[in-house]
Length: 255
Picture 1: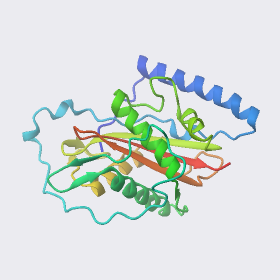
Picture 2: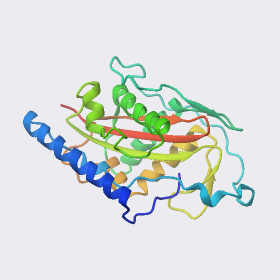
Picture 3: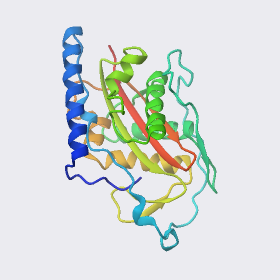
Picture 4: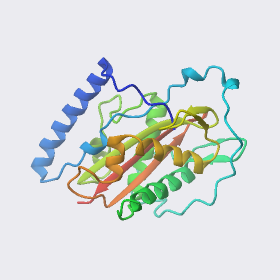
């Protein structure tokens, strides 16, 4: 979980919006030529980013009692798919006082938590797809390595480009991203308190809460304002050496 970035328009946001618009127009032209269906809009909402400047004096923050270690993560399928993103950083981890937070475990917990939230709204579970997860993980790793937080990378590539580069994989897609930290206090999403993620299970719940407390991200999870439901999806988490966490969740509608 983390603080919300201000919703006020900025020059940077304006440039990002224009970049997204140009990308979507280009995608629409290509889609028209191929007879494809574009479902990208639901996930292009405002992203959530931690602003930790208010936490300069960590000793003044009551973090609470130490959590219990994570339970066994629910298994997902296709951990080693035939098709992967060549930039997939694979597994990453960070050791806290409670446990070693492993990215694979976080991904499994996020996938299960998203399906639990969908079940509460009478939606079927999203099938795990290892290739989609690999593309998601590569984007999370790239955001960490090149120090940006956006659906559009510094080269101007967007989700459509990332999937096209791998296997022209999705007819329609959605993408949610989030950034937070492990082992340091961050503001709880939808709450005035703070939390310190020290387990994979707690971190996953925090990431999903970020998305569910943001209208556009929640709509992507719950298939609102999209013409077709998601057939499959994949979560990609990257945990940096300093405890910074980037998460990408891509949703797909099959060809």
